[in-house]
Amino acid sequence: MAAAQGHFSDHSNGTDDTDSAEGNAVPRAFRQAVEALRAARLRPEIELDPTRPPQRLAPHAYALEAAVVDGEEDLADGRLVLLHDPAGHEAWQGTFRLVTLVRAELEPEMAADPLLPEVCWSWLTGALEARGLSYGEPSGTVTRAGSHYFGGLSDRRPATQIEIRASWTPREGLGGVPDSAAHLTAWCDLLCQIAGLPPSQAGQADAATGVVSLPQRRGPQQR
Image (tube, rainbow, N blue to C red; front, side):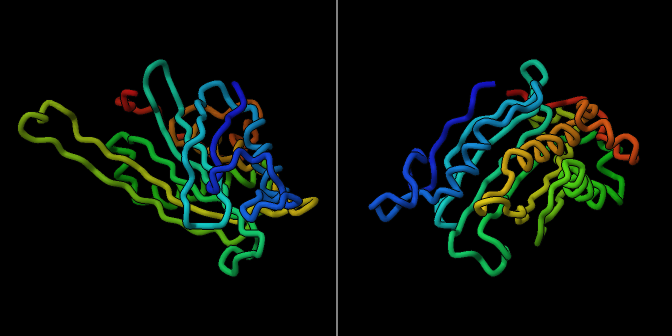
């Protein structure tokens, strides 16, 4: 997979750093974290592309969108945003924050499981822990929504979608830089799990702990 390129929230290309005389210079720690995201190597089922990041959540932001692809169909998709505030953020308890949206279509019988929200949240935290990652201040929501079709759309079968919105603070390492590539890999593990794919070789240990994926859905979204 080619390295992902993209835009920073300040519209730079990430080549500046804090030694620059420009007021909107990209901090070295943030630039290194983004470079690690761009260099990450992921499962072949994952298609990853840069997207324009949000403008007002933090002084610096970088965003990626991804889909789990089977042929011409998307089994799951999502967005991951890396935020950075060099001054720190009280709610984050750090200078970096990862924010995500993950969604996939479910079989009706799976969607009816009353424990599904708790299970999906545990998949997120479990994916991070399976990669040996330390993180803090996790928060988020798990939402399931059903659609029933009528009139000219009545030939479509009812559909249910699961959506995970979450954020967490990655532990900062040497030079104040988090292991952003490992967090991206864990996030992609979550995407594949919610898409119903079996664990990758690196994630085989999950099977020993009883972690299972959703069964692959009958009706993945057309791309």
